[in-house]
Length: 320
Image 1 (cartoon, helix red, strand yellow):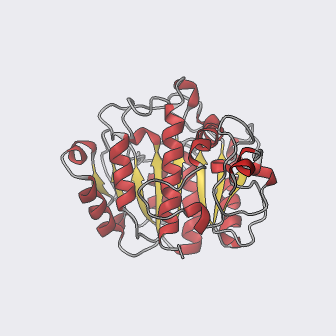
Image 2 (image 1 turned 45 degrees about the horizontal axis):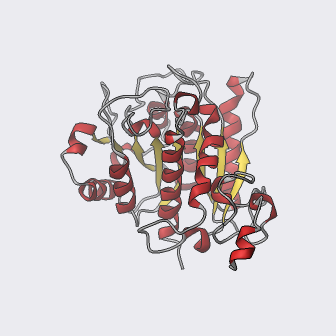
Image 3 (image 1 turned 60 degrees about the vertical axis):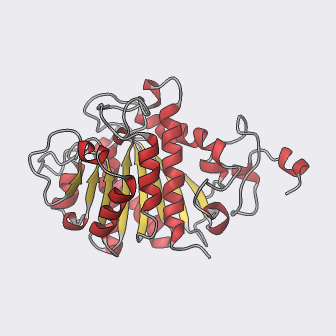
C-alpha cells in the first residue's frame, strides 16, 4: 500500500471493503474495532468472529470488566500495522476476521443473561466461524462452552487462570465466575481428563479430573515444556482456550477483579501460547480485564496481545 493511502485511512472498522489485510490508520484515532477489523454482522465467508460480552455481574470481588471489551479493542490498535512478531505468517491476511460487535442483553435481567449469550455464540457457530470473545467476567465462558459442546462434543479446555473456578455449586440458577468451570464439567461441556489449568495459585478441594500446572510448578519449567505437556493432554480433540487475565502476575495485569501474586510474567504467557501452535483450536476468550483498576492501560494491552495470539493459534492450522 502506498504511504499516502495509508496516511489517509480512517475509521476502517466501517469503511474498509477488503476484510483481510493489515490496517494503517493512526493508532490514536478512528473507530476501535479489534485490530481494526471490519464491524459487521454478516458472517458469510468469515473464519473467526470477534465478539464482546460486557458483563461483570457474576464477580465475587471487584467489578469493572464490563468495560473490558472496549478497552481491549482500543489497546489493539497498536497491533494492526504489522504481522505479529515471531509467527512467520500474517493471520489478518490469511484469515477473514471480523468484529461482530457486542452481545446485547438487559443488564437488569441477570437471570436471562446465560440463555442470551448461549444463543449468541450458538448462532455464530451455526453460521460457520469460530469465536474469539472479549469479556467480561469469567462466568461468560460457561454459556460459551455449552454452545461449543453442542456443536463439537465435550471440549478440551486449556485454562490460564489464578483460580480453578471449580467451587462446588449445584444450583444451576446461580451465576458466579468462581463456579462456572465446576458447572461446565458437571454438565458435560468439558472433557476434564483432556483439559489443563495453567497458572493456578489458589486452593481447590477437588479439580474434578482436570490436569493442573500450578504457578509454582510453572516457574520451575521452561515454557516450551509447559506447552508440550498441555498439547499432550488435549491431544487432537476439539480445544478451547480461556485466558483469565489474572493468570498474569498483578505486576503485569493489575486491572482485574481478583489479583493474586506469584503469577505468570507476560513473556511466559507469550511463549506458552506460541508453543501451542498446532492444537485443534475451535475458539477462545480473554476475560476479567477490568480497566478501572489500571490507570496505565497495561492490563488491556495484555488482553489485546492475548487476543492476537489466540487469532494466530486459530489460524495456524487454517493458513494457506
